[in-house]
Image (cartoon, rainbow, N blue to C red):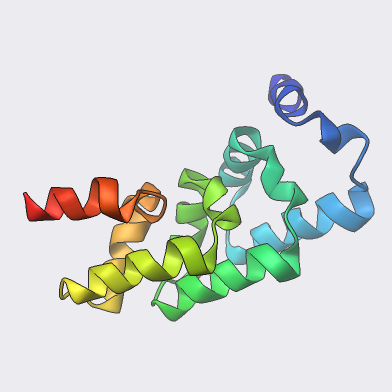
Length: 138
């Protein structure tokens, strides 16, 4: 009950703007199919309830598919989403692709990139010019 209260306090639209049957259930079921257990699901939704407002077709599925194409399996994707659910709202063109391309230019292959993202998903949101490149140049 306290988790539900926290979630509603963070994202009150869940109680009125979204249909349980049309919006919330399909996303929760999809996350479970990915392999998220109940504990991961609760943590993810409590941390970032806005995840439930993202489109399955326009946001969630394309990003997960992209991560899988890097070589992540379902458990790695579930762990990544649990660690940083906001990642599912990041742009493929502005966040995912440039950072992965830069990592590949450093000589890191897809499987190593997948491991890096799984271990530290915030890397996908860090500024290339202000954070990532200066740290590597150092």
